[in-house]
Length: 147
Image 1 (tube, rainbow, N blue to C red):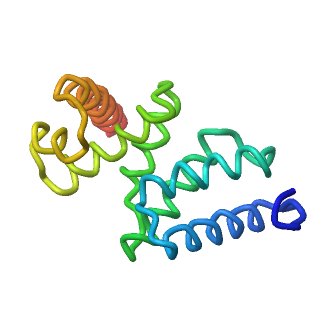
Image 2 (image 1 turned 180 degrees about the vertical axis):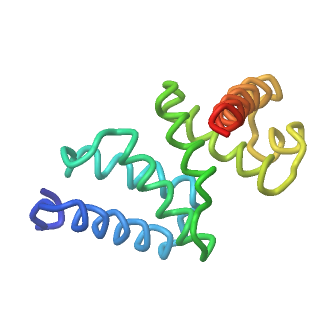
Image 3 (image 1 turned 90 degrees about the vertical axis):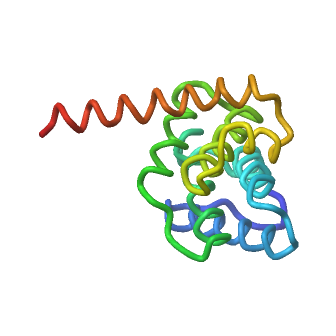
């Protein structure tokens, strides 16, 4: 293990380690997106085994969002992040999708403006937006069927 630390034995210790790393990176001035990536990679390499990749990513994403925004994440944000991982939108593409979701659905940007802000092509932004929209529609259809 790095940093001379022993591995976490419980989920609570694991979450505390994730939170400590997130606070440290954000305190050093890292932006939220790079903090998510770095903490996810660090926990996956050095201390994996307590939860799967999707759960770990969701935990890191939720923690960084709540710390950087100073508030709790909404369930929809967690569902989007988990869905992106389940649908194999991983790595840089998954991070871009999460950032695009935030720009479009939370900051009310147009897809064109979000693409310019993120420095990605409009084609890539539209493709990611389509995946996000499909997920949201599936989620709404499921909610309608339950009621």
